[in-house]
Image (cartoon, helix red, strand yellow):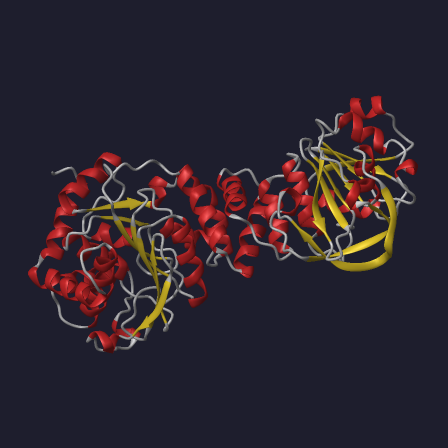
Length: 533
């Protein structure tokens, strides 16, 4: 466990700091400012030093200024209130009487969002207890002001070369709601706490992660570097607060970085997938849409798994069609050549997810991994059709796809709760084009010449029933199952660039089904997956 030395300047807030730092996972040693000397600190070799608040000015702070001048070049140091003033004084700034006394009062603090302020809203309310302050006109070139009040009072400073930061306010106060995030940022930058623990406290305190922070935190989770309790807390905290686009994009990058490589010879492919969690019990609509789109000429790399929240997953359906679902990369390329479609079985290409399988089963809720999975296809598709079970997820997933630089995508949600384009209700859509605006609109089945039906027309009892319904629809059986496949395949064909509009895509999908080419694609995929081509 990493060690943090806290220098106590005889202040009652010191042990609030100690409590927070301990909660963040560090081993803390406390020494009063006249209780230890420089050789003693060198012998202790702390990973970081925190200098507490206290009465008086830097001249009354004992060893504090010596530690800053002698160890600050190499040892990360955070100064709080008096500690902050000590940092300023050591590097040549003046400490003066504050124009207004702030004892037990809060004020808004505006910051630069860097280092210790990463992920912290600006402004935020901070608790202040001080009558002295750093003179802003005396700040030397070696320091930069990282936070101020509206009145221009210096609230934080940062050394331009050394790992030294100071804050005038009290992050350890309960009235500084972002305080633990600020401390976690300092400890994370110092290598004292993990990115995941720091991210957890950021989320719990209402903050957001940028994409880099999310990638590092989720990377640690995937690498099994965190206690299960912390992993569960992080996942649930994100779920309750709602995942942002940046957090999803960062998480997807972490998953992709740990996935088995898939090289499809630079073919630009489409993927169709729902995130699951709609609990509708429908047959495999996105799988059928992928098969029809492939038969229509759109190269498809379908990324999927067995059922997680539904009754039949893509892998379950394809396996019942006789397809070998766990092809290696050579097999994927063979399938793509023969059938214009390959199936990427998620467990075979994301082995790190096996470490979280037990935890995800125990939680038994929709988590960020359900949202990330369709976006984390290791083939990195240029075109994507993604369904979500909650309209609040449409925009974040669309923005994440934009950040991941897909060429053309649709994020869809049926107002009946379906994570597909629905035949039972209007569907809300966010359409993404690289370098362009995200366009949001709604479609209605009737406006596309489709008959609206009750969801019961699309539901199944189990995986066998799902495969039967899918095969009948692909074989040309008229009715709601074929209609919903044509609707979703039409969107896939449009996104994949083989149609100029959704309505044209639907017409192409109908022709593919009626001509028998959809079922031919199933047979080609089956044979190619077993090495027959």
